[in-house]
Amino acid sequence: MPTLNLHIVLAVLVTAVVGGLIGLDRTAFGQFMVSQPIVACPLVGWMVGDSAAGFVIGAALELIWVLDMPVGTFVPANATISAISATAMAVLASPGKASLPVIGASVLLTTVLAPVTMKVDGLVRKWNSRLAERARADQRPDAGRRLARIHLFGLVAFFLKSFVLLLVFVPAGIWAVMLFQHLPENVHRAMALFVKLLPLLGVALVARKLSMKAVDLFFLGGFVFSAATAQAFRAPALVIILLTALAGLLGARYRAQRSS
Amino acid sequence: MRNDHHKEITAADLLGVLGRGLLIQASWSFEWMQSLGFAYAIEPVLRKLYPEQAEYASRLRLHTDYFNTQPYLASFILGAAVKIEQDRATGRNRTVDVQALKASLMAPLGALGDSFFWGSLKPFAAVVSAALLMTGSWWASFLFLALYNIWHIGLRAGVLFLGYRTGGDAVGLMARYRFTRWAGVLKAISHTVLGGIVGTLPLWRQEFRLTFDMPALLMAVSGMAFTLVLVAVLRKGGSPLKLMLGLAAACIGLAYAGVI
Image 1 (cartoon, one colour):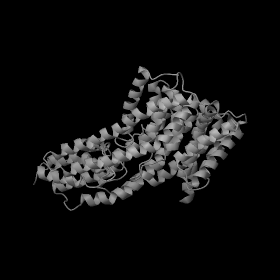
Image 2 (spheres, chains in turn yellow, red; image 1 turned 90 degrees about the vertical axis):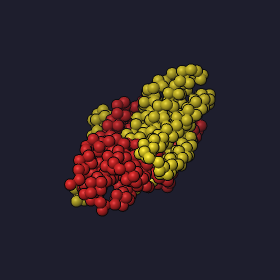
Image 3 (cartoon, chains in turn blue, red; image 1 turned 180 degrees about the vertical axis):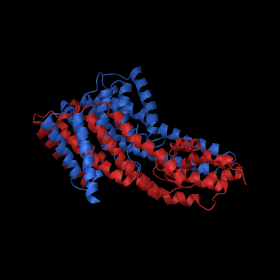
Image 4 (cartoon, one colour; image 1 turned 30 degrees about the horizontal axis):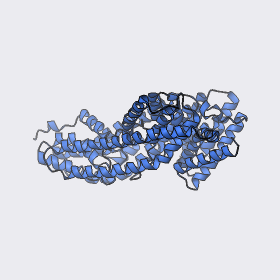
């Protein structure tokens, strides 16, 4: 079992700094989607020494959180902090390669912590209201430069939010995952199955949010097409996925022609 | 005739607005939302158009009023506002009320942008990339960034220049980019590939592959049945958080029941 040595302390610090920067992409800067689990997890996994664990967590979490959207004043759970901390916890708490049960436990722990990220996100946005009021009340000359300074200070607030949360979550999570490793074998098997089922939960969540219908024809068609292609031609998965996407495009065009 | 040569807006000025527009949400708050961000993005143009300090400060103050829309399509409104300010500063047209234009555009463009970018493009890029990542293509994370940002960056720049050229003609924007039509196509492809993810379940990467001893087709059908059960649960109302916790509890139950 690894102890909290200098390597882990440094890795936690680097995760918090990089996670803070990645977190800016979520709201404050650009929104290039670097903050999505499918990108952030492999990146952090690679940084702390196990990119494979990052790919697994990123693939499992991406579909679960992708349609949890910030609309109006609604602030969704911060999937970026959850995904980054799950990756760092799983890798840093494992002596070698992160095992599937450890990955499952890390994902579950960060899921439990997700409401905390929502609360803190809300607090930062409330605090930012003061920035706007200060800028609007400022009547002194050189208002533009002053407004820019106040506005950009919001970046610091957004960075510190992710930085501090990661600095708390990751070490606490490493400790919890170390304790998890002493739990009975049944719990380990359960966590391994949990990870394997997460992608299906993600598929269900996206299917539900993309369509109001109980069963969407494109969804069923994609399933039948890909399963049949895999069985009949034994084609590589990459080819099957690309052909399925093409079938979806042709289906959309056919539907458009019929309705026009 | 007045010499307003220095009040010409160049492509470089607009690119400057585009660059600053990436930070439109740097100080996002519940109360003022993107108001400071809008003023920050347009500020260099105002400084160029209004050399007289009092008028510059008054116009800048005006742009700190409440503003909120989808952050990418905010570029269109920024382009239109630059045009209106230029016409006002040069005396070409002083009758158009920039605040009224912003107020009339921000809600419809917010709804349009949320639906297209968050509700269609993002899940499309995520679903296609997750499908490839699940089946072992490690480069899917890069594909996700490419699929998303080709549209994101292209449209963000395109609508800024269109907003400037048309002075905020929303009908022209809709006719040119046909967001609703593309959203339908992207959703259809996403749905089809979602079905494809389940259909290729026997080809998933090792970490996600279920170890039950059954034929590949039966495994895919079981995966689909399980997904449809989850969709039915979601239709009765359930958040990602609750479902993840429920799934973990069910896995622990199965492990202790000796099923896995």
